[in-house]
Image 1 (cartoon, one colour):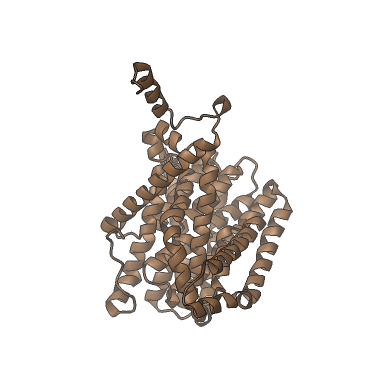
Image 2: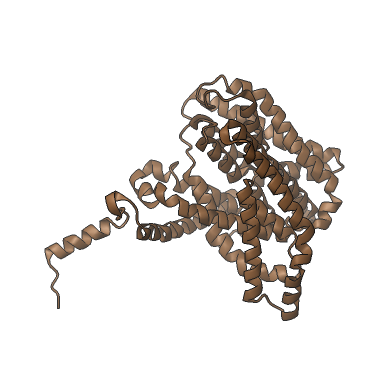
Length: 453
């Protein structure tokens, strides 16, 4: 029997206190270090997202997804890193973020794949004129507003990179203002009972197109800012070709999967494996050409077999996606978010001006377009409220802008503020202008129970 000695206890204590330290050569992280952190990160991410999401539902009437977005920011440098920088740095070191990034892309891509599976083509056909008008207005007006405010922003040192052209700066600001938080919009639509409604389909369709245009514009900015014209050509041309292939060839190629599920009454592991291979292929193509994996997932989802196939797919894939993988997406974006950058009155006033312009351009334009195409006032207001949400898709674009040197930290923080405010206001504004009366009249069902599920 081994007797514990003071040296043994001291060594054990030292081992425990250095669990989160790098153990590789020359102070680098080895594979086991990443493994240890990954499981710790996952546990903290799920806990934070469930707790903050529940608090947001219970006391602020916010959807779970908004709480998850805020939880991601809390775990990043804006709060945890501000209060406990050493602890936050030990749990989420920069070296481990690539691992988290992969999980984040898988989560948001799978979620948008499932959203695509609920896409109602008949609603789109009925509301095609309104969707096109809302989408066009939601792109055009933000770019016009960007054309007006960008010359002013260029006069403030540090907002944009030195030497950036007014053309590139305007395109980037237009993309940021025109963006709709596609994954966020999808979750709000699902949680508010709008997934199978014409309003939900119209908003989701317009939001998807607006986001795709914003990503293509970003590709053009990166190309003209030094990335080369091949980036823009590959993004726009490759994305369009793959979309056309999926839309026209997807249904006949995938139809046998639906028949197999209908005949057996459940989805076999083989069918699930083939489905996930198809998803991964579509996500890979869209990511590789420079658009984004989520659009590959969503487009494929729109042509998947309906009925029993979709029911079984959601049963098998949705719980793990929503509870485990999707929160990784929010946290990864939150780790790159700094809310302490707006630190003087001048920058605060500029931030408020950007916020006001963004709301006017997106909410106002989409509302007006919906009204002009025959939607009633309440529906048009509901569309405007949903389309005005920007969420973490905005954070992804501005993180790219910061990383590529297009914008500076100050403008980055202002756009983060705009993204959070427009996202938080989306659900209560929608309920005020549309949801409450629609539930009273029976057009929409009751909101989901706000207790933890």
